[in-house]
Length: 344
Image 1 (tube, rainbow, N blue to C red):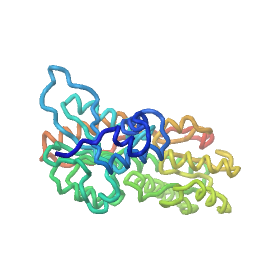
Image 2: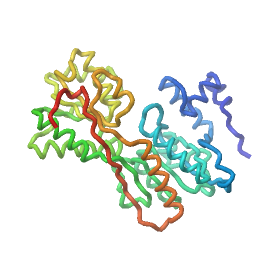
Image 3: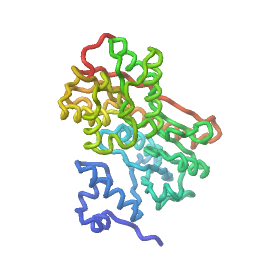
Image 4: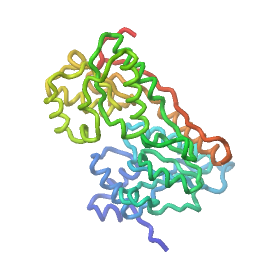
């Protein structure tokens, strides 16, 4: 019989307190990002199976508890939209007698196309995938014949070939309108910041950006801020900013976290926002409303998406033969100080 891995065992292996490990595993409290990730990686390595369960069903609802699996490469935490979506997803699923277990996938499992430690195919009624962006691994999950739901997906996923439902936020049109609004306000030098290949949503945002420029007979001013490595290190980003002889008038960023890192770096280099450069994000994270100047962004109805995700997976479990769905949830523009005064 497989030995159960405890929170204390993980704490002992890392030389940390049980309380610190518990915070990371339950996504509660303040922890340094590297500490949290180290704990999650060690938990996956040791085969820890975390059960995420919001509440016991009422006596009238009690019955057989069915198992769901959350499969992820990076467990969302903090103000990531997925944190709010997962909370409401769990709330609805628990009321329907489903229990959600988290299965972080390690790089070795991605490379070997192996199921995560502790995952039991026979006992799993449905799978939700969040922050899972490897196309080959997605195709492997497709062969399990278990109801599948993806919240966002890999940039290269052919959603017409995967027998699963997909839930995304509306990306293309909202970024098109945002970019076009800035063009109509006289801006001409635009750059996209972030990696369009990171996930489907980033790719769709980039396409909306390019579409708006093309519709106005413009081209991207520079591609120096696009790619995997630009934002991986603050020193690298700072060097690129310093080496750019003339910065664009507007940075359209893949999400708020890219935008916030960029704003901090620009300020460090003596660039004024929005007088010298305007910056936009995507997510409407808590940080976007705190940073100075407050960030123009696009709001995702994160909590409502959790309910929609639950309804989609429940309906797929109950009616496996229904047509597969690709659903985009409407987003909302939020103009703030980082783009200055605009007419729109």
